[in-house]
Each structure stands twice: as structure tokens, then as C-alpha cells.
Amino acid sequence: MVGFVSDREARIWVRVNGHHRIQIRYRAVKSEKDGRGRASRAIAALPENDYTAVIALSDLEPDTAYRYELLINGKEPAVGGKSGPARVFRTLPPSRTPGKFRVAFGSCASVDVDPVQRIWRAVSSIRPHAFLWLGDNIYGDSGNPSVLRRKYRRQRKVKNLLDFQASVPQLAIWDDHDFGLNDGDRRFSGKGNSLRVFREYWANPVYGLPGTPGVFFRWSIGDVDFFLLDTRTHRDPNRTLDGPDKTHLGTRQKEWLKAELRKSRAVFKVLVASGAWTEGKGSFGDSWGAFLNERDEVFRHIRDHGVTGVFLLAGDSHLPQINVIPWSDFGGYDLYEVISSPLAQGVYRGRFLPGGFRPVRPPNAFSTNFGLLEFDTTAEPARVTLRLIGERGGDLLKPVVLTTDDLKPGVRSWDRK
Image (cartoon, rainbow, N blue to C red):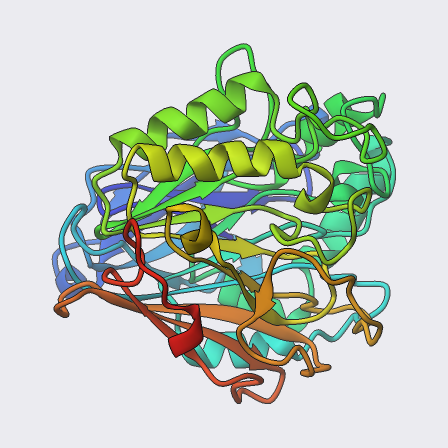
């Protein structure tokens, strides 16, 4: 699996069937005639890591296709009497440079409910630059490493996913079912084991901060910043009465997010959480609706520091949605939320509770789905198209186009979309 990729680096996740030394041999496709390329340093796949390893490739060129292949104990692995297949990934466009790029995302993939997962055919056909997993990436529901590893192994071997995960960068956060406990929070005793297995099976750039464990990090493509959040590790119980002391993110993650938003000079800044930013599940539900005090603290920070270009992603709800939180009513600008769920799970057909948000499109698309962000930051003004796409490849809802003119202080835009 291709993990974190930037314009100059890449990480390749590998799992093998025993205690072997593994390497990646790689070369730019455009220079394939110039020898066999370079080989990474060898890394031992160990039983204590479930024979997984992450191999870092550096000194790459931006926006360049690279062919890569696995070496096991210095040799190409045999598959059906032949050498193992070579794969191709592409580095990202130059950092902090305007461009056109696509980022896909989704959540809720159960190999037990749907072992075929046809959705990946539709995702692959779009050819995104990266894919973001927004949680419930497996349904482990356990703090036992053996159980979680077994679910990850099954998910990684889904036939329709194999080529896609081996060629398109994959980044991930978690939600309750891969955290290990339905509606789980900081009290879950197995969270240390869950984080250990998460780190074995993903190849993110970092995992939290020194001294603050978790799965949160910042990732960039071109001149767009993504802030992927951990809403489980430090979370207070949903049913705690909301107030200034109740936290969804924990103190250090929240301060990190505020500081990173202030520093960011990206055209768009995307806040990514596993659960909905809106109040559809009610004031004690498993979403930001149970943490409105802290959510609004972040929103006030965006307003008070003049942070422009922010919109929101989420998963979990089992119903694709495009909503807006009309923060223009409070001196800011309207904050749009795109929810993609499920990739491979049951679709929710109930009703959400009314709250302080508006559906931008009627939430009546009852299908497995993935989200797609189509950025064009070369345009004037820069724009992003928000799409939700079904298993057959068509738009489930009419796309919403946002521009940087919509996402700046004092602008009301929701009634024009």
C-alpha cells in the first residue's frame, strides 16, 4: 500500500508472510531506460509488528510517476512462478504551488458486511491524487491486537481494493470501531493496543505529538492544507454535560490545531474529523453535537484570527450529506460540511434531529458512496467542487462549488448554493 506521499517523499506499507528483510526498488517511469533504479535500505519485518513494515523513499521529484517493486531478502518475490508485479505511484504537485488536483475520501468499510466492496471500482475510475480514510476503516470493536490485525489483513486483501491501494496515497484517522469500542472515548482501556496496531497498518507522516499520542496530523497538497483530527483518544464521554471543560480533542491537540490554522498560508484549509460537525445526532450523540462548546471555540478562533478558506469533512453517519453551519450569522463565514459514509456498510434511512445547521442538498441519497474534492487553485478566485459519488460512479447529490470569496469573514453564501 502507498501511504503518505508529498512532492519529495513517499512511504510504502508492506506485510509479508514471515521474518524477512524487505526493500523497495524504485525508479522514475520517465527514466526507466537508465538502469534498474535505486533500492531503499532493508528493513526487517518482525513478528511483534505482525510482519508489517513502512519503507521511506526520499529525494523524489514532484509530480512524477515512479515504478516500484518489492524485494524480499534481496530478491523479487515469486508470484505464480513469476517475479512480483511492479506498481506505479505518483508524487504530489510542487508544494505551495497553485494547481488542479483531486482528493477522495470516505468512511465505514466493513469486510464482514461487504467483502466485495464494488465502491473501489468507482473510486479508482476517478484517479484521485490521494484517498483519506475518515474512520471505521475496519470494524474491529476490540482492544485485542490479534482481533484488530485480523480485520486489517482481511480489509487489505479485498480484491477490488488491491490495485487502488498499491498506487494511490492512503492516509487515515480512526473512529470508534477501529479505535476499538462503539462510541469509545478516553476511558477505553485498550486504546494503547489500538494505536499500536493502527501504526502497524497505516503509513501516515506522524502520529500525534511527542507526549500526546493519537492519530492527528497535518498534510498538504499543492497550496491546500488538511488537518486530520483524532476525536477518540482524548475525548470525554458523550453524555458529560457540555461546557468549557468538556473536550473532544484534548488540550494539546486543540492548541496544536489553533496554532497550525494561524500559521497556514494555504488557499483552502480542510478540517477533517471522523464524526459530523453538525448537531444531527443531538446534544449527547456520538458527534461534535455533544461538544458544541469546544467546536464553537475552534470556529471563534477561525473568525477572530481572520483564518480564511476553511471547510469541513466528516464520516460516520452512514448517509452522504452536504450541510452548512451558517457562521456568517456570528460575524464569520459559512462553514460547509461534506459527510461521506458508508464505503461498505449499511445505509442509514432514518431522520436526523434538527439543529443549528442547514442541508445544502436534500439528504436523500441512500447509497454507498465516497467523497471527492476537485481543487482548482489556478482559478481566480480559487475554487473547490464538493462531490458525493455512488457505487456506479455518478453524483448522488448536485455538486457544490465553493470559492475563496465564499470563505472569508463577513460573507454569507449558503443561500446562493
